[in-house]
Image 1 (spheres, rainbow, N blue to C red):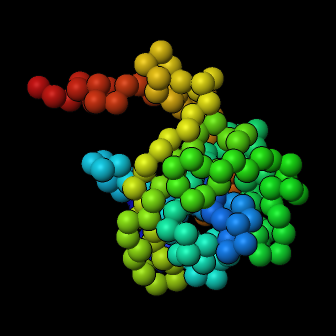
Image 2 (image 1 turned 90 degrees about the vertical axis):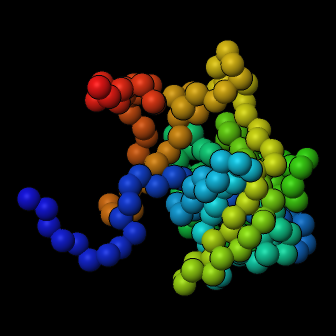
Length: 190
């Protein structure tokens, strides 16, 4: 039997993504978000939603670009820190010991130590309420060679990404693979 719950942001899991931007003084900044996802296949687009009160919001508005660095589980503490400290008050890269890298294709930095990075150019901004959704065209992807398979595609188990459970405020790793997409469900096709 199901029980009704008050509407809330309890979808699970949500990604743990670190959004990179430069401020007006060209200082690299990064913040962790959980509200984001792929929103279009052609052209490839990725969306992130931020509150206007965040330091990153103003930087993305000003520069028209952002990166999304995907942390592996070994960087869970750093990713959490990026979400609780403000770039307005501190240099998160210096404090965490991680390395900002200037993207060659968009006006935003990414986190060198994180294995997978999406470089995005803002194509649309949507006011949603408390959050503003930035729709970015993916114009570049950086991937550590160690996470790529023989076809040059990132392998989820090698990236070892972090997911976030909003209801319990927990970071979790992903479990074992369950089967190939567009294949395991074919048993129901007659």
